[in-house]
Image 1: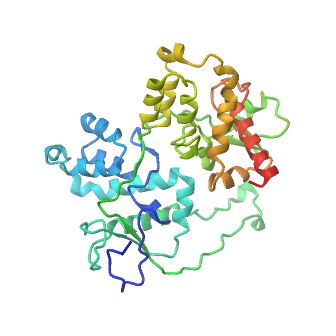
Image 2: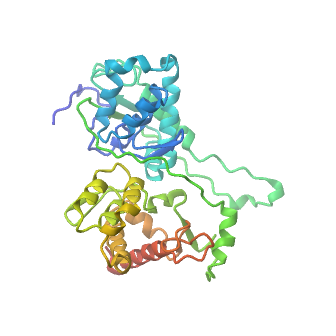
Length: 374
C-alpha cells in the first residue's frame, strides 16, 4: 500500500497498524487498570475522562469493542455538552497517565517501548496537528513527546547502595548503556483504521503481600523455597499467565480472546445461547461470570468435572504455542509455578493447601515444549 506521506522524509519510519510499531498506538488492545476500572485501550480511558467518567458515558464507552467507535463517540455533537470544562488544560496529563499505566502494567509492551531507546517517536496522522505530525512535517506531535517521557520514566533507576545493608560494590551490576541510533519511529494512526478490542471490567485485586506468600506456600509442604525456586502467578511479568489475561489464540477453527473464553464455552456444548453470550462478551472476567452463573448450571455438560482439566490443558497449549508467551513460559526453567489465588482446584486456595492445577498444567505444557522442541 502506498504511503500517505512524503518519501523524502527519510528519517521517519512509516508503518501501518499491522506493523511492528503499532503497539505505540492508542488503538492498540492493551488492557490496564486505572481510576477504578480496567480499560481495553488508551483511547477508551482517555475519552471516558473527557466526559468526567460520568456513568451514562462510561457504560457506553466500556462496551465498545471497536476502538474507532470510541473516537467517533467523542466527536458526536450530542455529547459535547458533557465534556468537562477543564478538558483542554487536563488532556495532556490524562493521556500521559494512561500511557504510563499501559506500559507499566503490560511487561511485554514495556520492554518493546524501552527497546526504542535512542529513537525519536513521531505520531503521524492526516488531520491531527495537536497529537501528531502531519504529512507536511508540521504539528505538535504531543503523543510522540509523551511516549518519549514515559519511556524515560520506565527506565530502571540505578540501584542505591546502603551501607547498613552491607552490600558489596562488586555485587551491583551496572547496566550496559544503549547505543543511540537516532532513527525516529513514526506512529501512523489514520482515522480509517479499526482495532478491535475487548472491554475488561474492573477486577477486584487483593494480591497477597509477598511477605505472606512464604508462609502460605510453606503450608503446601513444597520441597523448595518459593522465593528462589518458585514462580508466583499472576504477579509481575507473569501476569500474562492469568486466566483473566487477554491473550488471543486460535483453537478448533476459532479465535479466542482468552483462555477463559474458550474454557467457559466448553461447559455448554448443547446450549448455543449461553455460548453466544460468552463469545459476545467483552472481557475474560465477564466470560467467567456467564459461565459460572448458577442459573445456567443445569445446562452444563454432565461430566464437566471429569473433563475440565483436559479442556484447560488444550487451551493452555494453544495460548503458549507462540512467542512471546512461549519464551516467557520457558524462561521459568524448572521452577515450580504457583497460582496464588483462593480457588481450591486451580490455585493455592484460601489456606494455601489448594491443588494448584493451573500451575501444574503450565509446568506440563512447559515440559512438553522442552521435550518436543516446539
